[in-house]
Amino acid sequence: MAAPTPARVADDPTQSELRSLRDEALAAPSSGIVEVFNHGRDREGLIPLWVGEGDLRRPISSRRP
Amino acid sequence: MIRSIEAGETFYTHQRGIPELREAIARYMARVYGKPFANGAEPFTPERFFLTVGGMHAVQIAIRLLAGTGDDVLVLTPAWPNFEGALKVSGARLIEIPLQTKVDIAGRQAWSLDLDRLAAAVTPAAKVLVINSPSNPTGWVATRDDLLALLAFARRHDLWIIADEIYGRISFNGARAPSFHDVMSEEDRVLFVQTFSKNWAMTGLRIGWLEAPPAFGEIIENLIQYSTSGVAVPMQRAAVAALEEGEAFFQSQLKRLAESRAILCDGLRRIARVRFAEPQGAFYLFCAIEGITDTRELAFRWVDEAGVGVAPGTAFGAGGRDYVRLCFARDPARMTEAVRRIEAWFKA
Image 1 (cartoon, chains in turn cyan, orange):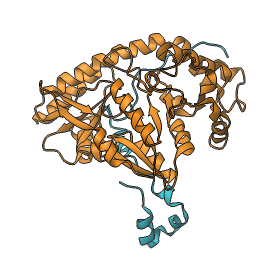
Image 2 (image 1 turned 90 degrees about the vertical axis):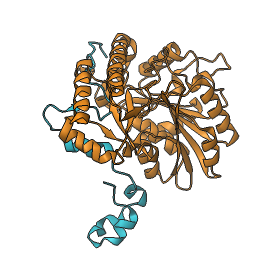
Image 3 (image 1 turned 60 degrees about the horizontal axis):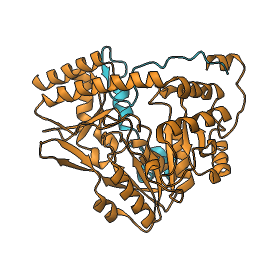
């Protein structure tokens, strides 16, 4: 699922609002990881190995400011 | 962090980061890397470090400093997709340099740098070379010789290097991965992006840093001012605690990663259709599956049919299209169960 490219925006009259946006903003690609993540994020029992973070919680320090 | 909020540290702050944290980073870098330049005695000083809202913000600032419309940026791929995104938003053109996969005499796969491909890809408009080692998603780790060659290449073509070394301490061959700090001199043009997210499990706190020549200080401060206006002080307090009290946590995480990596590698080796290079660093395994050409569809199927979520290789550039990425920063028992489910999917 790619972001709307400038060319696609120009071809699609329903996307006229987007024509005023910068080409560089429109060129920002959608994340192929987030797409799958959104598909499965609420699945009960699923083991998520998709995003780049661990499952350990950082211990909160009692350090004072 | 909580005490910082309770103490009322909720106001604007130093754009470059609070002095205590910049000093703590300098001490940490000295502990891990020794000194910033291979050929000098100069120590790490706080003036080299600029706090950012995560490593991603450090990448953005680095790109804003170096490249924009009309400029080419060389990126080794498969690569973390956020490089592509940030470059496209900047207007710069991304040129992908695929890593090679080789098979050694023992039949093991390995990713490697292809300097000929790099030389063939450089253009007159090239301004920046992005190097992420240890690599997300491949687990490739540049050798000291690779880094020397890349540095020589950058000097020859008058390029800046953006060195993403955020997984530098997550190495399965030695205490840490080779760093540009081991080979560079003060004249070399290298910006480093770093984060607290991975070593200290702080992904959601959004704090990282950019390392740059101190002479860039005012310019970087301005770019921070006009993007985020600085990092929230409670997050910076948490970062000081991570650097000064977090080594035991990091070491325990590293031990756990080695265990889960072994479980995943051993499990996938049992599946004849799966091919991969054993990751040498970072916490990802990037594998291809014989008979599968649409890894996006496969990722959706594994969610639905195996109960395992993976990242499709299509997200990591052209060189990653035939692969899926599995993050093994998981409890070993969960990793064992994930491997069992994947094996069962292949048998079904």
